Image 1 (cartoon, rainbow, N blue to C red):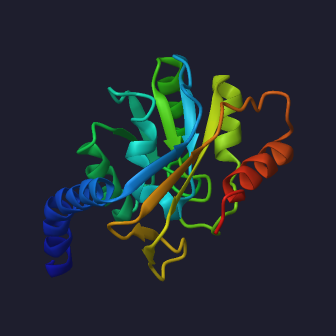
Image 2 (tube, helix red, strand yellow):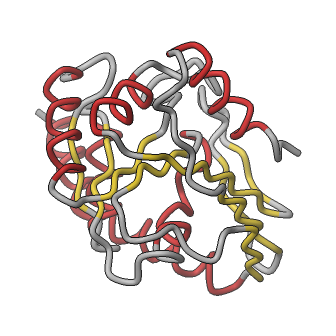
Image 3 (cartoon, rainbow, N blue to C red):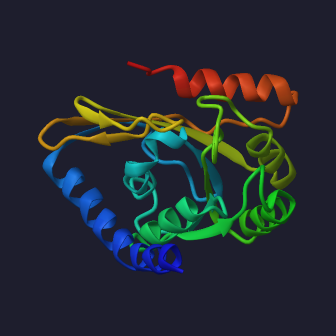
Length: 207
């Protein structure tokens, strides 16, 4: 009972505090975008590693000033925190992952893309292994006939948690480099070739 109460309280307070922290980190850092001028008007899938998720809202709003996006977030308690935090940036969510609610999440993701939403996904989430691309992003992109863009977020100085994803929290007063690829069409690639391309693209700027 006590655990349930503490979780409910955390779910009420933590997302607001984290959203404030994200804004503070962004404001106090210099940002450098290595990115295309635009990604067009068609819906796309934006992918980044789970450990770099914290600052992803600003990668998206670089191209869409008015968010029209859903992020695929797990049904775990941590997923609840992430979903509520991203809500402060105008982001909607689809709940599910490759381990829980996978089929339902896949169907809802494809429907959302076809109705004009962009989609955000962490291809190694929600539980890893770290930097290993799961099938879901490829299946989703192919079935929805949509292109993907790869995002790597590299701060000059940061704290790194001892979690499975080695979650990165940028320190203030540094530089955050956003590496955002041109749109990539996976249609002609096999599942394994597409996964390899995504993995190599996201690892390209590892420090």
